[in-house]
Amino acid sequence: MNIGVLAVQGAFIEHERCLQQLGVTVSEIRKQEDLWQHTFDGIILPGGESTVMGKLIRDLGLYEPMLMLIKNGLPVFGTCAGLLLLAQQIDGGVGSHFACMDIAVKRNAYGRQLGSFTIQQEMKGLGVIPMVFIRAPYIETVGKKVPVLAEVDGKIVAAREDNMLVTAFHPEVTADLSVHRYFLGMVRNHSL
Ligand code: GLN
Image (cartoon, rainbow, N blue to C red; front, top):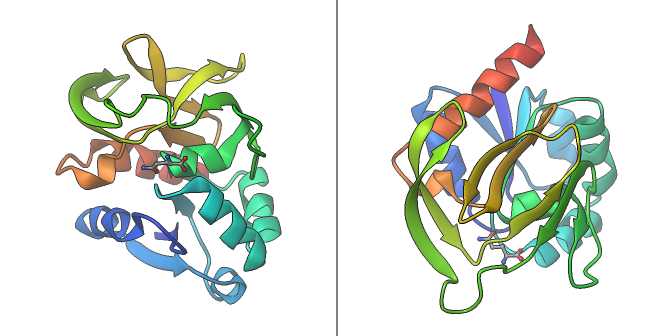
C-alpha cells in the first residue's frame, strides 16, 4: 500500500511518521512528476495554511491531476487546512480549492484565545480520542450524503463523504493512530 502525502507546506512529516508506524509506504507529492512516478492507494492533505497550499498546488500544476484522482474515487484524508482544500464552500469570501466535498466551512473559527486547544472527544466508531485544534476551521453545514463523525461543542469537526475523510483537528500530532487506521480501512475497502 502506498499513500501519497501532499508535501508542499505544513504538517506533512507528522502524517508520514504515523503512516510509517502503521507499516505503510509513503510517497511525497511535491511536483507533477511525483504523481506520474507512483501509484497511490490514497492521498493525505495535511494541515498548514490553506491559502498558501491552494496557491502552491495551482502553481506546481498539481491542482488538475489531483482533482481528477479524488473525483475518480481515490481515498483522500484532509486534516485542518486539508479539510479546507476539499470543502465546497469556505466562509469569508475566500475562494474554494478542490471544492469536491459537500461541506461549508468556517476558517479560523475558534477565535484568537481558543486558537489552539486539545480535548478528548468521541469520534464515531473510534471511541474517545485526543483532538488537537490549531487555528482550526469547523464545518458549519454538511450535505445530505455526508455523515458527521465528530462534534465538539455542537460544531462539526469530522465528517466523511464517500472516499473523502476530513478532520478539523490534527490526529497526526498525537500518539493515537486510530484516525489514520480508519483511513487505511477506507483505502483497503476501496482497493478490494
Ligand atoms: N488556519 C489554517 C487555514 O486557514 C488552518 C490551520 C491548520 O491547518 N492547522 O488554512
